[in-house]
Length: 318
Image (tube, rainbow, N blue to C red):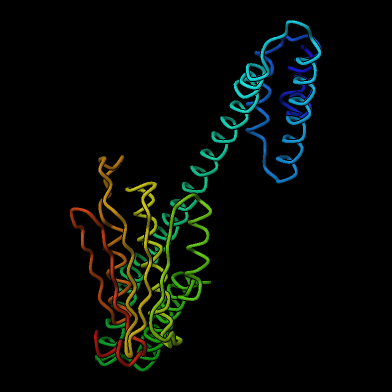
């Protein structure tokens, strides 16, 4: 028994098999059988583990029933089967359930952390563009004002160089901000992969497509479509865990309609958000020339965005 206990942490399946053998030979060690079964169920991660464990259980049941039949005055076979279910099958299932729940929570936290990381990167990009871009613009304007004033030729050339440097710095800042916003930015074609990752995290997601899909020529619109789905899935997973989620892509002649719908949770959310994610998403969709609407109904939470298919339409909308 001491050896079996020592094996539980390193080789849980071997410890479970040893417990089965001890239970057959001695009829005792039932508590140890429950512990090793729960630990083995927690460690099952591949189909091979399931097959090996099932074979060991079948062999244990066969030997136990054979021993019961050959023993005079032994208990009824159904009692032995009930003991097998209580002492082996139920602990295995309980351990597997706990492992699946932990993996589901881990993937859910990873999904939410990725969304928060992207929000922070977008916030930094906005701050850099608003603060540094504004200051560099002021420097450029002041330098241009000095350049047209009464200055000696040498100083006028220096002020002109300062204005050129400020404009070059502003242009470089603009490029850096764009790279920070859109580096490896996912597109509408990556929505299927996003839905697959959310399903792998344990959520029930259904995706539907209607109309004839065409390439979005504006990368901002394509990226905004991905972010709409990502924000909708993140909110659903966070505020309505376990509820089914529906993602819809409706291709119109001149626009793409993206919507995410989930039932409203009956229990209050664990933490109330400030809505910054939806506000940032509204700005992103508007920058692509589209519209975003959020419909928090009594039964369903509905996020829908309309994105133009052509950059010319986006420019007209803004």
